[in-house]
Length: 129
Image (cartoon, rainbow, N blue to C red; front, side, top):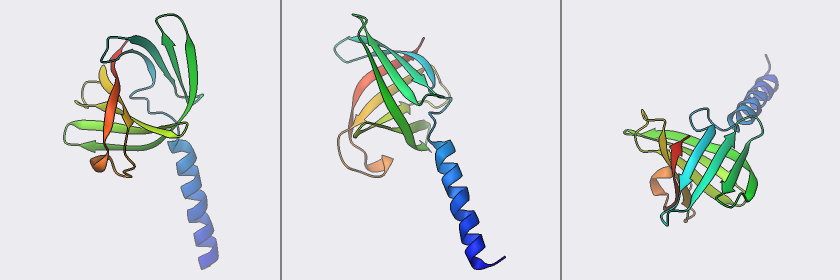
């Protein structure tokens, strides 16, 4: 193969991987109860196929957000998934990656491009419904 064809095949492969990688992970997809520090409860649903997060508060007010998973990683016993939601960046963090029933939904508050440098605030503690 010529070099140009090889570069073309690599570019197509990368694009396919990026498109497939945008779906939310099965690890956090589905229904959760989110509890804020102030005790506010919301129903959270991560839809893998629609790439959406639906939030329903205690008054029944519903918000639907398009999401894009842009990173994932493991550090010691912790597993994280980076999510773009509008112009903001969030993480779903499993502090114990073996426990898939508890996680944190954290809003990134700095402009770090790496999880190790990320500073954020916990929006919700998530419990599997």
